[in-house]
Length: 347
Image (cartoon, rainbow, N blue to C red; front, top):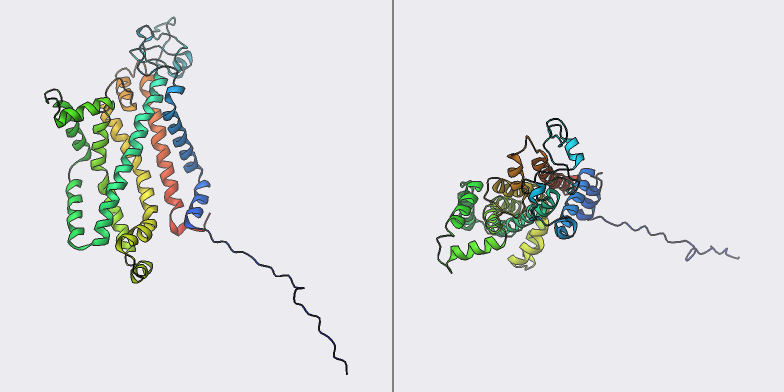
């Protein structure tokens, strides 16, 4: 009796493999950040401002310190038409000299406002990146040691942070500037105060601004990092790493730090406008950069003295300061939403 052969399906049935590719937290965060238009716009503005600061000498039509006294307080016609209080010479009650040589007008010393605003971006952006650098380096070290070690070390470091918090940041920076700059003229050559003051003058007055911000910017970061470390140091993957023989340094660097970077990035991005406002305020009251180095704060201060007659001299630097600070705020808000793990997988 013949047995019917069953057709073999081996090799006839196609094997379909569907690759399921996971998406990391960072790639998911980047996807959501790109869909946040305000954050994207803020990032574009910041990148544009950085490029302007880097290539300021190529973009600015005039050197920032070039004075043409015959063109003092002049302005182009479109600026005069923009502000109703400004009247061009030749009109009834006119007093503003019309000059198309300067795009935004000239200040009371005949210096180009547009060029000085461009060069002023270097000061604000330098503070915007130096401040977080100090904060992250010092604050993260202190926070990691306090949170991971615990005990007496944690208590000692946090009491030091509380002591620093008790001193007003702005007052501390003002006292620092007053001590070093005020005593520089009487300090003997070769002394510490004389050397620091000399370096400060060579940096256009930025050294003590950097030092003041650096010494006072890390406390909040230290508290944030400590809290984040306390929340993750008892997690299962930390216990697993320890049970496998990982050293404390390896646990901190390879397991704890990557899992707390999100809140740190968000916090520093949202704090950058505070650093910029510190520098602008110090320059506004005359304790920031040394003239003729342009700063948006000092330009606003100089323009505020003539704001009724020449509002362009104060409002245009203020608009540049406003734009950059809000760009960092928009980017920080976008990063906060993008890096929130509770938003993962959502649009």
